[in-house]
View 1 (cartoon, helix red, strand yellow):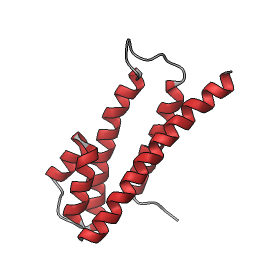
View 2: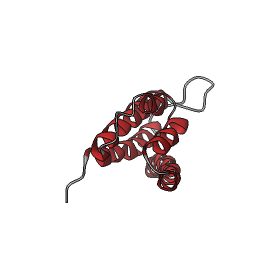
View 3: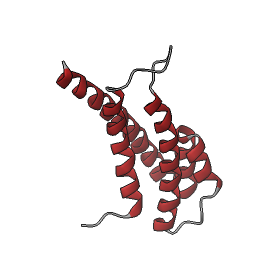
View 4: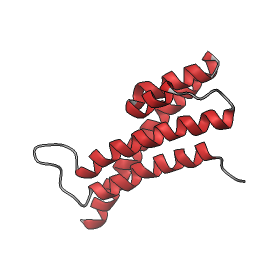
Length: 124
């Protein structure tokens, strides 16, 4: 079974949360902040991957180039992904896909926490 490009991008996005979670266990937070330099870089990676996913999904599904919707997804994914989904799908499918995207975000945050906690557990 082969995966199409949008699925590969989603896999990379999910794995990026785990990798950053692991990396966060090795570096201290930025001065007087709750996040590390890896987290800052990860924000830009998330944006790029969300933009790439919208473009690839549009190509695979044969919808007109999502243009500004994909750009919004790259600049502000929490708002842009649902906008893209509602512009490219019937509203019921878009609503289900938006719920799936929210679940994907939660899964990513859990993966990041698991990555950090597993390294801290191994090191202690």
